[in-house]
Length: 65
Image: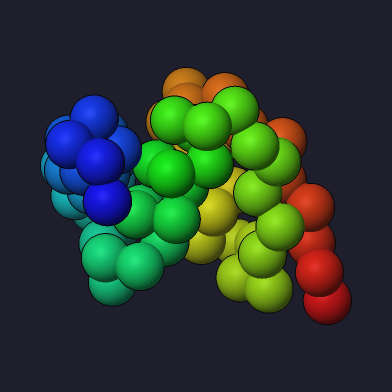
């Protein structure tokens, strides 16, 4: 993972933690890579990824379920 995406994943994880919304590292990493590359985020775990968007990280979410 590129350094900027890794840094962003860390910020997302920290922001989630400060709001009491902790979960595994995979979702913040995937979201950070999507943000870094300006991609839509297709996920089967819509609720987790929606929390990231609600924190102010702009991303189009697509629920694959």
